[in-house]
Length: 319
Ligand code: ADP
Ligand code: F6P
Image: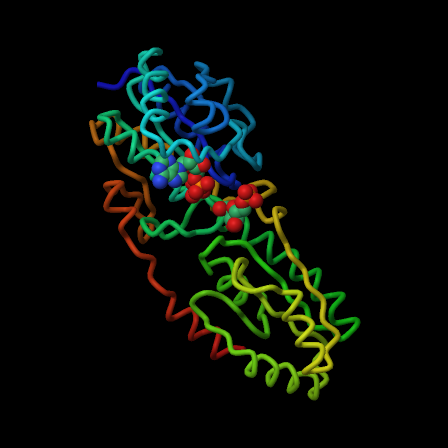
């Protein structure tokens, strides 16, 4: 039986993490469970930065971006000794279970903790949408909306000057932000992991647009794939398009979560607590076809993301 639960956020922050923290705390308190928060992710866990909280802690946070629990990256968490220290911190406070909100890396940390026999649950929080065990991660939809706001603005000025804009979006090694934003923004070209690019095709298409006097050319590029500045220079040389590069960067991670992310986070947070109450440990929460489900962590980490064939065909058809 769980009497005390702690929650942390880890890895890259994402809009909606606060809504998930709120849901976890409130769902726990509602069931008479004592709730604890851990600051700075696994780093705070190892250092013992843990505090008991009441409902007041969760007031006015559902709409706040970032994570009020703060986040960190702690590579040393791969060491067994560090993991055992973390578990000891939890046991010292009689905390029976840990809920971690983050991406795949955070899940791997949770799996290691679970392997030492300590109860854990993971909730997917990341703007990248790179967690295979859920259709959507908390924060993806907000980041997508932010990208669209930015591209709309870039398009205004690109059109005024008949420019080509190479816009690099985040995603680590996942192309979802690029694919979805390309559709929403009617990008002229998309360069991402599942949508291989061929320089000659890019130049040909841009030369054609230039000849047609198209007012702008928006090219969405996934990060970590190529050097946008080098490609921009080649585009200028080969097509005559005045080309600028916009690396959207960390602004994609900020801002108030959209309604979709607040609701997703609330449902997932409540489900995480429900699992622990039912004695279901070592799981991660996902949203699959609108159902909130719990999947074994190891199984979840072994899952491969499907390539969005239908969305890629749509891009090819509409570009
Ligand atoms: P995300 O959770 O967003 O994928 P990271 O990959 O940075 O972000 O992972 C967050 C943290 O999870 C890391 O800083 C580290 O503390 C922990 N972590 C990542 N990979 C592992 C692993 N293989 N074993 C144990 N802990 C890990
Ligand atoms: O995982 C979220 C993410 O924003 C990725 O899209 C990006 O590659 C990475 O984190 C950036 O990490 P950092 O905050 O360490 O710059």
